[in-house]
Image (cartoon, rainbow, N blue to C red; front, side, top):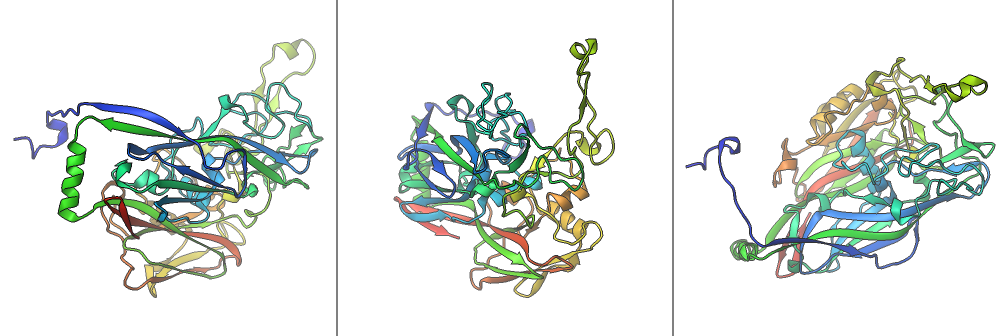
Length: 489
């Protein structure tokens, strides 16, 4: 009777008896502290019902610099910045492609508000200046970090009470459907993570070795100038992967799985996969994609100095430096209230919520690749097997409009000006699948298996030798039966 009624007017409830939950802590195969470019491997539990989206990596991290007097190091915004590559193997077979610049893709999606990460408590979402919002303590102010209320002059969290975490992932762990799998049906599942280079950590200049330098003009590079002689580095320790496992006393799931395998011959699990291409762009960047369902193309134009040691970059419109006034002597010194009079780069008062400081690591700062932003008119067009997409050349506002039309998941409360898009968040997205494809188990993207798609990103009035990162988002299919797997890319 109620089969044709929508859920908001239907009365129904179902019950599943005998459900149990537990959590496992998994240690990496390689123990001890791990530095940049090292590889971590985790083996997930076998013969359990595993919740893939529950996987989270906990760790401590410490930073240092080769310069012990004038440079301090800060962690980049977002803990996923520490991942350069991530691959998933099943029985030695590569399932999730180990594409490079994983962290660039994360920040490209984050720039557009197309990020699934909602945990801000453990993921280090902002760059710290003189005090850590993670511990509430000021950083040390001497060359040796002598400060009993902090964990050192450089930003470090070496106490188990102050661990950071990676709670959201790109690829199989976040997009496999269903996201609760019986690992007894699969060969041994191994997660392999390659840590990023040290350059992701902003290196800040110090004033007389006592305080982090503030930017004082629109031409400065943020809370610090480029580090003078200091090379940053980081090290991770106490690394664990925590996962949730489930149990069901009922044999309903086993019966459904057996019935599906008998009907089709295998279980099909769709998930998002990525292929990356990078170039020093000069008018045209060429690449090719071979997939059963090519869903989207992400293009990130990184800061020309993003591959070198640098201080953090202030986001356009926000305060370059907080300025405070208070009495320093006399009777008023003990009773006066410190007043913030820092001025945002936009209007006084802070249009678009800019009455505060905000920074991004230069390695993940995306800039319109033109000689003069706002004056030089650049054009962009994608070619797939010599066919133009779209049929006309896009200017920057048209690139943004097409991009937001190509994204299914984004933060609707986030505000961003066109100026900020050009100077800090210049990322483009092209969609080739049906709208809403994120919410359905459907392959609706371009099928380029018969003939690999020969693609080119063509631009006009763009600065030559601009770092360009291209990511092809595809829906792959994992087929499994009797612990044997097949991946249809």
